[in-house]
Amino acid sequence: MTTSSLAPTDALDRLAQVIESRKPANGGNPDTSYVSRLLHKGPDAFLKKIGEEATEVVLAAKDADHGASTQPLVGEVADLWFHSMIALAHYGLTPADVVAELVRREGLSGLEEKALRKAKDRAGEA
Figure 1 (cartoon, rainbow, N blue to C red):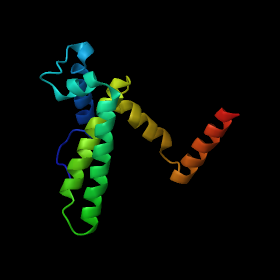
Figure 2: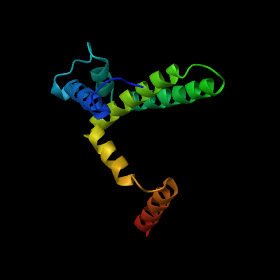
Figure 3: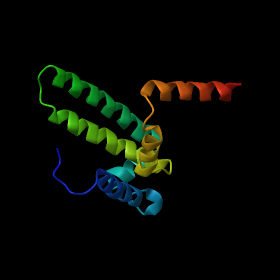
């Protein structure tokens, strides 16, 4: 548990601002910034990192299932979120867009939400 009095979205918003400032188009330097380097290389670079981090989340969770500390899971999820935020920035999105989607889903069961998405997808195919 965190003892911070700041809302989690405050930290995400600050990180999103840093990522935005590191975009090459905003003066980010790929020679001195990891974020800028990933963005400069393009989607394949940061999407590969998202895949790697997602796998590491799974492995850390499996380790926790077998008695290992849960702290590595927290660190791997942080890495996954970080790289996902780079993808959001690349596509002109922010954590607020993700939070808005979660709010939209609030009160829907996961099964209802999935059924609504499938119905919407089928309607788009017609």
